[in-house]
Amino acid sequence: MPPFLRRLIRSLRGESLTARAGRSALWAVGGMATSQFLRLGSNLVLTRLLFPEAFGLMALVQIFLTGLQLFSDIGVHASIIQNDRSREPAFLDTAWSLALLRGVALWLAACALAWPMAALYDEPQLAVLLPVLGLSTVINGFLPMRVFTANRDLVLGLQTRLDIIAQLAGIVAMISLALLLESVWALVFGSLVSSAVGQILKWRRLPGHRERFRIERSAAGELIHFGKWIFLSTICGFLVNHADRAILGKFISLEMLGIYSIGFMFAGLPMMLAGPLVGKIVFPLYKQRPPSESAENRAKIFRMRWLLTAGLLSLSAILAFSGDWLVHLLYDDRYRLAGPILVVIAVAQMPTVILSSYDQLLLAAGDSRRFLTRVATSAVVQVALLIVGVMSFGILGAAVAGGATALIVYPLLVRLIRRYDGWDPRHDATYAALALGIAALALWVNHGAIAILIAETVPQ
Image 1 (cartoon, rainbow, N blue to C red):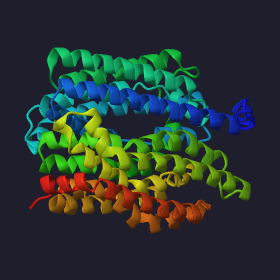
Image 2 (cartoon, rainbow, N blue to C red):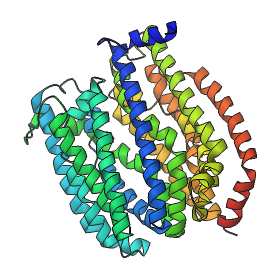
Image 3 (tube, rainbow, N blue to C red):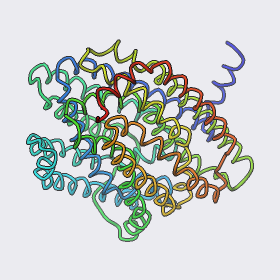
C-alpha cells in the first residue's frame, strides 16, 4: 500500500475532530455521488416513459413547495449546530415540535394557494397536484432531530445510507407508476413514497434522543430569536436558487421548462454537492474551529476551502466542456436544447461555486443578521437580473443571472466575512483566473450548440 494511502487511512481513524470531519466528507461525497447517479438513472428511464411537459409541471410544483418550506424556515438545523443547549432533551423536543407544526401549516398553505397558482400559470392540474404533493411537508415535519445532532457531531454514515434507501424506494415507485399511469402523478406519488420511507427509517434506526411533543418557552424563544433572521434569509435564498424556473414558467411553455430543468439538473451538480459538504462539514468546523481565534484555525479552514473549491470547479469544468455531448448521448432529440443550456449554466455558476464555502461562517458565528444582509442583497440583484434577462434573452437570460449576481455581490460578501477573518483573497483570485480560462474555452468548444439555442429561444 502506498505511504500516502496509509497516512490517509490512519487520519480517518479515531474520534478526533479531523478524523470525524474526514469520514463525514467521504460519506457526504459518496452519498451525493450515489444519489445523483440514481437520480440520473431514474431520469433517463422516466424521460422515455413521460413527456417533457410532465417534468415542467413537476418543476413548477416543486418550486412552489420549496418556496413554502423556505418561507417558513425557522433555522432548526442551524440552531442545533450553533446553540449550546442543543444536547438538552427539552431543546430538541421543542425544535421537533415547532418543525412538526410548521409542516402542517405548510400543507394548509399549499391547499389554500393551489387555485391561485393554477390561475397564475394557467395550468388547472396545479389545483390538485399542490395539495397532494404538499402532504410531503407534513411527512417531513416528523424528521427527528437526531439527523441534525449527527451533523453537529460529524457522524454521517448511517443517515447517508438511510437516505439512499429512501431514494431507491421512491425511484421504484415512480417508474412502476409511470408504466401504469403515464402521467405526472407517477412523479408525485413517487416523491411521497420517498419522503415517507425516509422518515420511518430515520425514526427507527438513528440513535439518540427520541423526541416527544412539547414546547418549552425558553427553548422556543431561543429558536425563534435566532431563527427570525434565518426565516428572512431563506425567503431570499429561495429567490436566489429557484426564481429562474418560477419566472421562466410564466414566459415559456411547460415543454421548454421541462427541457431547461434537465439542463439545470446536470449543471447544478457542483452546487448540489457543495450543499451537504458545506452544511454538514464546513459549518460545524467553522463553529468548532473559528478562523478568528487563531492562525492555526485559519490555515486549516483555508486549506479545506482550497481543496473543496478544486473539486467543485473541476466538476463544473467537466460539465461545461461535455454538456452538449452528454445530453445527446443520454436523451432523445426532444431534449437536445438541454445540452447548450447545461453548458451555459455550468459556466455561469462558476463564481457561485468558488464562493460557496463563505456564507456559513456568518451563521457559525451566530451572526444570522449579517447572513440575511448578504442573501437579501443577492435576492434583489438576482430577481432584477432575471426579469430583465428573461424578457430580453429568454432562457439564456435566466441561465446567466446567478453567476452575474455572485460577481456583483462579491464586495459585500468580502466586507461581511472579513469581520471574522474568513476572507482568503489568494483563493478567490487564483480560482477566478482559472474559471475564466475554462469558461472561455468551454464556450468556444460548444459555440455551435449555443448558437442554435440562441436562434431558437432568444426573443426576436
